Amino acid sequence: MIQLSHKAYTLLKKHPFRIASGIRTSTPAVLVRLKYEGVEGFGEASMPPLYGESIASATAFLSKIDLSAFNDPLCTEDILSYINDVVPGNPAVKAAIDIALHDLTGKLLNIPIHQYFGLSARSLPTSKTIGIDRPEIIRKKVNEASKYKYLKVKLGGDNDHAIIEAIRKETDKPLYIDVNQGWKDRNEALEKILWLKEKGAIFIEQPMSKNAFSDMEWLASKSPLPIVGDEGIQRLPDIITAKNFYHGVNIKLMKSTGLREAFIMAMTARKAGLKVLLGCMSETSCAIAAASQLGTLADWIDLDGNLGITNNPFKGHMLKNGLIIQNKLPGIGLKTPQWNKIITNE
Ligand code: MG
Image (tube, rainbow, N blue to C red):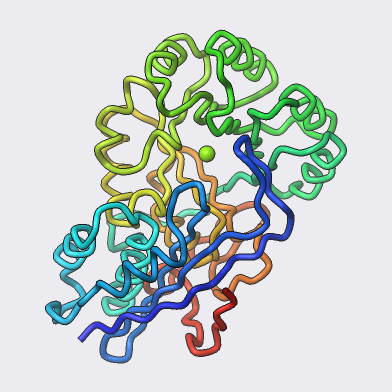
């Protein structure tokens, strides 16, 4: 029998984090354990409030789950189809179960999950995210991120030019730009993209509202840099229509309901000629390690969510000189934690 346990666990941020839509100092999360014949798999739901899930909604969802009909945890498709259909929505808590189930599967088969998906292991350069801030703080953060080959820069507030100028005083590293739907006028957006290309940007993520369909279509046809959808891309059906508005997609486990659909999304996107960005929320190294398992499917990697929190309860996921080093541990690549010692801090 597969046993399900869970704990509320609020992620505490090292620094307040500002993007176009607001500022946060913590992120509600729920940790999940699946146990089968003494083997444990771990998962995580990270739930930034703007996506609508919470510890209360995740706990309510988990209380509806009954895995007693499933005798074999390797029947992943059956189990995850059941989880998907229990209640609509709830992608992050569904991801927590999906991640734990894959971790358990890898441990039962004694293989890392990238191997389970037919993927190789490789060192992966992740970008380091710089939130919206005053120029002097931006310059400090750029210097703190000296190990990273790429910076992911949040724009879309009222000081886009000052932020880029501050960065360019410190470094000429390539930049990933994330506007978080912050630009409101398509002509102004195109002007900024032309300027950012001159400044060494690689791509522009979600420049305008996910609902500004005609503006996004216009912008994608004119932009000299790839436009990547994030808020506009949640699950597999969004990949099918993505080509009208974007050149690439940001796939995150907390949106996709976990590894299984993220894998299918990344494969579908690649076959459709879309670029793949693998992203994250503020997360512990549990969900980050899980997403890293799909790293070789991505053109760009932004898996730094664990670096910004002070209370990460997991070990095993390694980052060296800005590179995610994939280990050979079975499952998602974590050392098995002592579940009973992880203290709920809600
Ligand atoms: Mg984004």
